[in-house]
Length: 324
Image (cartoon, rainbow, N blue to C red; front, top):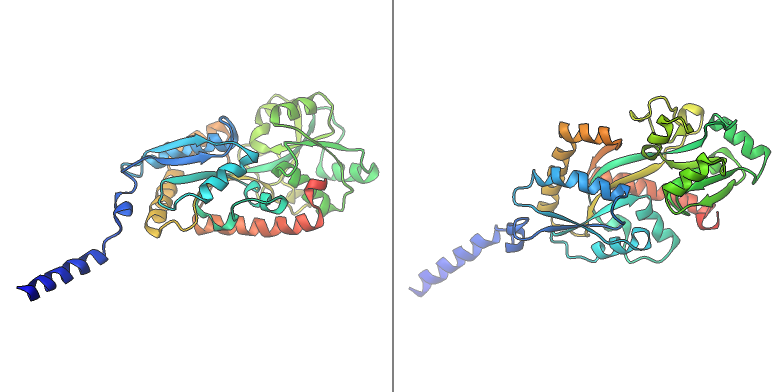
């Protein structure tokens, strides 16, 4: 009897070795998945998250996403919270790159950008340079020539020091051998566009999706878009590369998880995002809203971020933007 009990006990124990742990087996049905958006409601990252998550949710039976806006330090506090969270599939973060990778260059942070588990990139919003409708500057070549002819006298506005808009201009100056133009940082797109339209700035730097209303109204003109190819939302705007400046820059927005997310959870999230981002209704709605989709899943997403981090670290060493 004793031997039989030992054998049965051993078989039972062996059977449990092939089973996932209880917490993983229950995922994601036993409690909501919190998605931290580290910015206030209504911005580009918040819009991206709230738009894509319901489509993903429909592809994960039992899942409930809850978006939590946890703003602070330009996104840093939210990313630190997710980095420190348990890697159990119940805490995710919406991201904005390059900010995710540039903050550790600028200051002390409590996360390592490339250690996050990268789930899916959703949006890649190209950067652009714009002038008022009556500006004599009509092309990138005109801008480069003006900056060289009048060092320090050409002004440009961005949405803040170290923003992707600011980095776009620094990268162009570095690439084209331009003297530094005069940077005027603004706290958001609204005051920046007002200053540009009002003639208080020579140039405005912001994302292409943010330019659509002003372009369509004829209140501004685009000098170029820093995308690999022309975005379908602005097909008449030439790329920087078409104008002889080999520069691609913008803001990507996606979803990451804490380091060490188990493979079975990561793979289910990746599959759900892959299906959601291919959904025809979702793609149609993104086009209607002027969101430049750029689906990249898992390792492909991380590789893109790692390559950008290397590029920006080199730029930081040559032109540290906190001093620009």
